[in-house]
Length: 79
Image 1 (tube, helix red, strand yellow):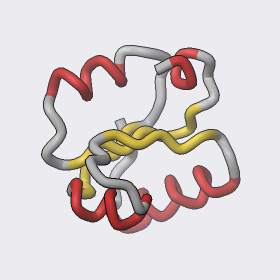
Image 2 (cartoon, rainbow, N blue to C red; image 1 turned 45 degrees about the horizontal axis):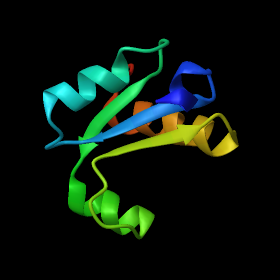
Image 3 (cartoon, one colour; image 1 turned 90 degrees about the horizontal axis):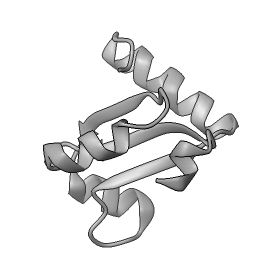
Image 4 (cartoon, rainbow, N blue to C red; image 1 turned 135 degrees about the vertical axis):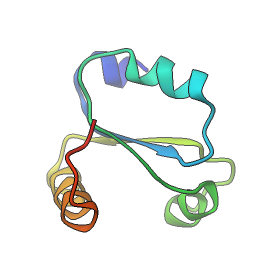
């Protein structure tokens, strides 16, 4: 949460089955785009960690490329 509040986070990824309360708490900070189209199992495989429900990507070239890919594949702007 402190990385979000400090403006270091470029995008938040919430597992598709994440609880509304957790999403609301993390989205309550500065205006950060959020994605909720990836399920928990896929997030675990991507990160190599168990129990991943929320993931923050810090501002970087990776974050820019990720956001571009999401926009391209979904055809939507992020929240």
